[in-house]
Amino acid sequence: MQRAESKIATFDARLSDLHLVSRAIARDPDAFRTIMQRNNQRLYRIARGVVRDDVEAEDVVQEAYVRAFSHLEAFRGDSSLGTWLSRITINEALGRLRKKRRAQEASLVPGGTMEADIIRFPGSPEMADPERTMAQRQILRLVEQATDHLPEGFRSVFVARVIEGMSVEETAELLGLRPQTVKTRLHRARGLVRKELHANIGPILLDAFPFAGRRCDRLTSAVIKRLGFVS
Image (tube, rainbow, N blue to C red; front, top):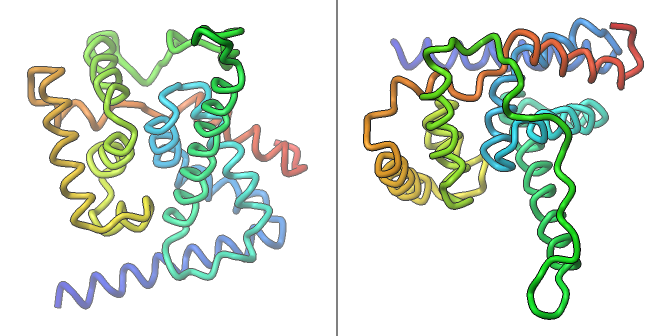
C-alpha cells in the first residue's frame, strides 16, 4: 500500500513539473519564479560542491537556469525537473573547472611558475549572511572547508548524498556513476571529513551552504531580468 502511494506521489510531482514547464514555455513569469524557488538551494549546493566558491556557485546556477529555460521543450518528464536542472548545473560547474585548468596550463611559463594569477570572481565569502546565526558560523565554515578539501570525485558525491540528501540512485544518475561507485565514494568521503573535523558532523550539515532569503531572491530576480521580464 505504501509503495503504491509513493508511486502516485511521484507521478503527481512529475505532473506538477510538466504543468510548470508548460506555463514557463508560455512565458509565464510566475512559473519561472516557482521553478527557481523550488530548486535554488539544491542547485546552489551542487554547484558549490564542484567550484568551491560561494560567488562563482551563484553565477553557475544563474547560467544553468538561463541555459535550461532556453531549452524547456527538451524536458519530457522522464526524470524530475529538479534532477534535469541538477544535470545542467553540474555540467556548467564542471565546464568552469575545465576552463580554469586550461587557463592555468596556458599561463605556465618555463620553470613552472605562473605568468599571472587567475582572476577571482568578485565578492567575498565573508559577505553578511542573515541565514547563519553567530553561534553557527564558525562551525559551518569548518564543515564547508572540510567539504572543499575532498577530492573532486568524492566531493560531488558527498554534497549530493549528505548535504543535499539525494538518494543513491539520484546521485548515480546525476553524476553518471554506478550506484556501487556512489556508495564507495561516499564511504571514503565521510571518512575524510570525519578525520578533518574529528567529530560527528551529520546534524550540522543541514544548515551548511544555505541558499535562502536575500541570496535566493537576488538570483531569482537576476534570472527573471535576463529572461526579459520586469521583476
